[in-house]
Amino acid sequence: MSRSDKIASTAASFQVLYRRLAELEGVKQAISKRMRRRDHAGIVPLRRQYPGFEGELMRLQRGARALATIRRQRVTPVFENQVMSPKAKREALDRVYEQMVDVARAALRRERLPDIRQNETVGPQTIGVTR
Image 1 (tube, one colour):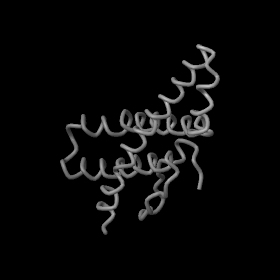
Image 2 (cartoon, rainbow, N blue to C red; image 1 turned 180 degrees about the horizontal axis):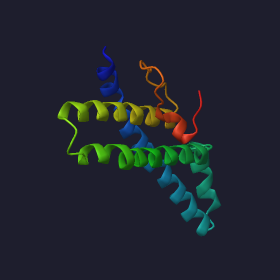
Image 3 (cartoon, one colour; image 1 turned 135 degrees about the horizontal axis):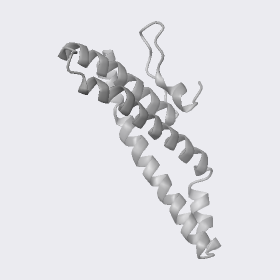
């Protein structure tokens, strides 16, 4: 499997990250709603089903913010650049996309893609995830 195939096969990490983020944000809202209603018995099953969800929620939120920053700072300028050749744009976007996949996978605590280039930083450190 080539590196680009591996990247494409792991692109699902974006969908998984955003789905899980939405799920955990819903849990947080449900718990908050029950707390406002003083329905402590309704909170217990949610806490059992999602133990320690707050830490995972914070990690996924940091990952989503990092992805948004990468898009804003690195993807948009490439698309707006009228000087770059289509090939140069594709190569630049491929590198950024690899970084974005690594950030998403790190936020989900999954294995990073192997880095085949020397002296090039990748993104999981952006969200404070260490291996």
